[in-house]
Structures are given as C-alpha cells and as structure tokens.
Length: 379
Image (cartoon, rainbow, N blue to C red; front, side):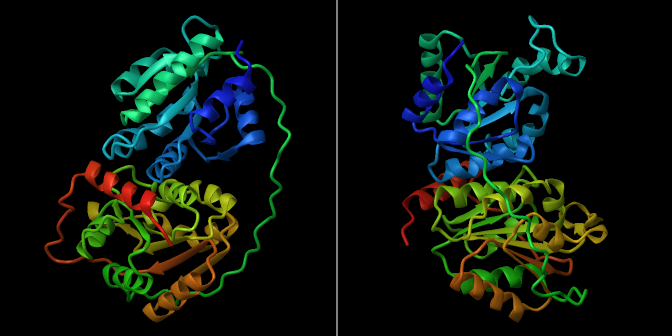
C-alpha cells in the first residue's frame, strides 16, 4: 500500500496541484488528499473532466484527471477529437474496476477486460500503479516525461493501493437565486456572425475566444485568424468545460466561449461545474437557433427547455436572454466593467455566410498558438 500523503506530495513536487474528475472508490483517498491540500474540482462526467483539464493544460496548469474505468467511455470523445488532435497531454489516474485477476461486480467485467486495449487504441501510454513506493515514483516520472513530450499517460489503479485519508475540507454551497435579468421576445432576427463580430469588436483582442464545433468556429475564423482564437473541430459539447479550464489557468484573463444550443445540451452537466467554480472572467455566449444547422438543420431540444434557467439553476451569477444587438452589447460592457460569471442566451435565425471557409492552420497549430497566447498573456 502507498502512503497517500507521500504520493500526493510527490505529485505536487512535479507541478500537479490541480485535480478534476468523477469519484471512484479506488481513488477516494487520493481525492480526499487533493481536496484537503490542493484543488479538486468535481466534473459532471468523465468527458467534461478531460475537456476541463485540456483547457487548464493550454494555460500551463498541470492537471490530474481522476476517474473510474466504468465511465471511461464518456471520455473517449474528448480524448480522441480534442486532446489528440490539438496535441494536449492529459494525465489520467483511472480506477481499474473489473481487472481480470480480481473478482468484481458484473457491470465492471467487460470494461475491466478491455480497458488496456482501449488505452492502446487511443494511443495513450499506461502502467499499472505499483504499491511499492520506489516503483510508483518511477511510474510518476514516466508520466512527467510523457507530459514533457506532449503525450497523454494513464496510471491504472487497483483496489486498496492508497492509505486512508479523511476528507476534512468541504466547500459550502449557496443555492442560486433564480432571477432572469432580461428576456427575449421569441423572435429570431439576429444572425450569429454579426453578433459575434460586434462582441469581439466591443471586447478587443486581449482576450481568449473559443468557439464550438461547426459553423460557429468557422465564422470566428472568418473574423480573422488569430492566436487568441480557438476553433473546436470535434468533441461536441465540451466547449464550456474547455473554457472553464482556460479561465482557471489564467484567472484575470477575459475568456469568451461562443457556444450553441445543441452543443450545450449535449453535455449540460458542465453548467453545474462552471457554476460551482464561478470564474468571474468567463463570458458564456449561447447562440440558439433550435437546430443542428451544419448537419442539415435537424431540431435540437432547446425548445423543450429553458437554457437561461438551466444556467441560473446551475449557479451562474448573471444570465440574460436577449433579442437585440444593442442589448447584447450593453451586457458585454456590463460584464467588462464588473466581471462575474455570465451567460448570454441569444435567439438567432438560421443561415451562415456564403463560401464559408475553414481554418487553414491545423488543429495542433491552433492549440499551440492559443496556448502560447494564454501563457504569455499580460493585463
């Protein structure tokens, strides 16, 4: 058995002081250590945790993702179409339920059997964490080396590897107050590109802008291909978590996330993590046209729920649902004057620009340049 405090201190000495993930009984003592001594930010699911870590890594904050392999499938999308294509190294520590040599519950058996093969298929180097301290330290060095080379790495954790640690620091939460600051008139007269252009012009370029997959990213690129623009080309639904990670890594940097209704609803649980963490310099803009436009305008479920109230119930400090460009710009200026976690919901009409191109830089170039912008940013 490893001494959890000593193991955690070794992680700390290597720069790992930020943790996110979803609980696993095999990792509970390490989670308790991280919560007691550093920051452990719970994610709604494993994929959100990977995307959040990716954002933090872009900003230079080394992150450990803690998860159980039974939820590994939730992380496949961001691991294959976000961290892989943008060359963002992720350090996973994953509880190995259903490992072949151990008896376990039926629901863990298949995933336990195929976990190593899944890691291999994803191109993620891995090792089974030793319960001998010297061997475990060598394995941590392998993870550090992989990170320095831009490669993801996973340590598989068996049962009862870590010594007991009691949780002694629990953050008290205040229930959000449900109050919408403005409402739209249900008319979709605005178009995404012009509103996005006005927002960028109103805020300026000393800001990190991230856009969700599809037409939104391509329209942001049309505004000018810049190092402070991140164009998400896959991992649909992960934009909010990615932007949260960026905001955590550089707390004073203004971060604007251009999201879509379908993408947000795909990983709606991310709202709760964002609301819990409350980064004041994050502006979350949701363009709502009620459809998946780039795949043929199939309807989303946005008309069956209220995105603004979802954000309010998740703890966002300020939420506005707006229908005019003037009101959008007023709210943007209010956010600049008094930064607080804000979501602006904008009902838009369908349609995009003629001859809309795609970013010429490759995703790994976009990720590299965006990371350089964040890490070198100064007020």
